[in-house]
Each structure stands twice: as structure tokens, then as C-alpha cells.
Length: 87
Image 1: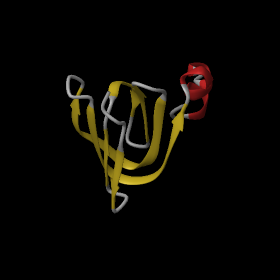
Image 2: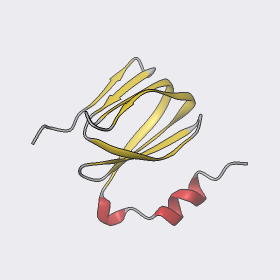
Image 3: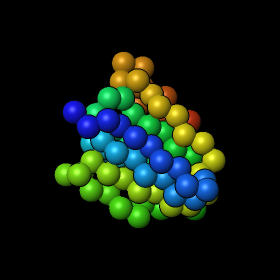
Image 4: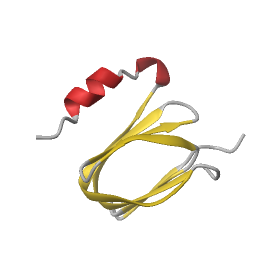
């Protein structure tokens, strides 16, 4: 199996591999499912430059403030929706 990787360039471009799908996305947050767990990205003016599910690649551009890996067993969709509720 190919190794999972996250590459961050100048906090403006993020390349993520082993992406299965994107659950939620807006200009300030993104939640994607990976082959093992999930990733949560927050920032400003985020935009998906490339999403290729066959290749398992996601490229995000914008000002990236933070990202975190979430284990599958700890993922709670209800909690995510409350945290990132739009005003």
C-alpha cells in the first residue's frame, strides 16, 4: 500500500494523498476521509484546486491555518457539524 502523505507549501498549498472523499468544504474548512482516518483543514479563502479520487489526491489552495488527523474510531459527524456551523 502507498504511504499517506501531506505536503504543505508556504501555508498556501496543501497536497494530500490517499483521499477517499471530501465530506464537507467551504472557504474556511475542509473535512476529507482518508484510507486511514480523516483530515480536518482550516484556513481562509480555501479552494480545491484538484480532487482526483481514482488517484487519491487532493490539492487545496488558500491560507492554511491548521490541520489535524482524526482517527476513524473517534470521528463524530454531529460534533463536526456543530464546530463548523456557518453563521
